[in-house]
Image 1: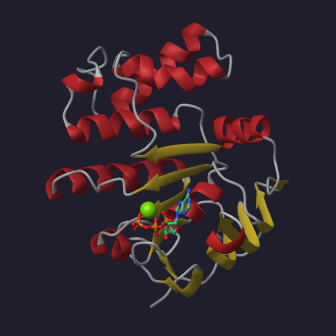
Image 2: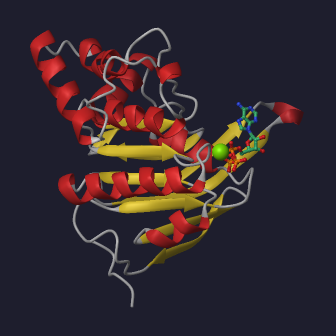
Length: 241
Ligand SMILES: Nc1ncnc2c1ncn2[C@@H]1O[C@H](COP(=O)(O)OP(=O)(O)OP(=O)(O)O)[C@@H](O)[C@H]1O
Ligand SMILES: [Mg+2]
């Protein structure tokens, strides 16, 4: 049984996106014309062979990169050709990242890391602290708030990263291999946490993964191959309602 495609306004609306790295003879077209709609509350796994363009597409969705051609609307805003400052604004206010390249800051404690995006956004200190305490409690780290990243396990660090990603109440959570660096049990716990958070908040999530268990556990899996979507699969799954 498959779940029908949701109707209504997409939170992520991508049309004909290409991305070419370099110019002239060394130009490499990595995305070759991607169309993708993701609706509020969807959980989507993005899979495909190494080099197929998954991270490039996720970076585009995350306003960390710009498409070479094509359009991208995030929550109704045309973000295809935003300035760096405009991209940073969208990242801060619309998106949460659980990326291996978006590191926790080593000199800051868990709670300070979670408070950081809120301080960029000018959230008052008392509110920052309150939200960070709630979020770290929610991800099961109430006893570890003052630990720095190197005093935490890999799974605990990933949970801090999830709390930080949620601190600005994003419209969309983006994860690039969120369990990639974890052993299978810890990876399952992190995934279960993401699904619990989804059940509570109906947050839209896009997860790039090589892990077949993750890809099989989401209601929708988008397969990229050589810079194009070659399969867009929907299924009923028990975990994510
Ligand atoms: N900044 C860059 N400059 C030039 N080429 C790049 C750049 N970033 C990525 N590429 C190339 O684009 C292609 C797609 O890379 P991308 O990182 O999107 O793949 P991926 O699907 O995420 O792969 P993996 O599963 O290995 O993470 C690769 O061939 C890569 O070498
Ligand atoms: Mg990648």
